[in-house]
Length: 130
Ligand SMILES: [Zn+2]
Image (cartoon, rainbow, N blue to C red; front, top):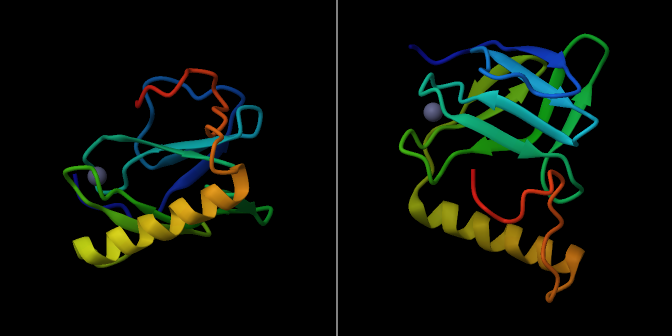
């Protein structure tokens, strides 16, 4: 499947399974946004909505997701933004850029949650990765 350049959004209480391609599911109830990677690899991308993770902006017609989706640890290494239901693709970042970004995010989280605290898990599943 080719890279997507547009998505549609759906406000849901619970995210359905399986996910449809090109649909960004927004669950305010669970504070999370889930969609299938826009490169077509089929991976599920979970972007939690918290003050230090992602934010969703709904303008009445379309949604935008901030910051970008960077799938550095996935085989596809996709990097894109979702802006007004459009997928804006970025070039692939170098490892050095990614490391710098991760360091920055780590510091941001430490400031917000305190150094000794675990990040809260909005879905209550413990800290097991997806
Ligand atoms: Zn992908």
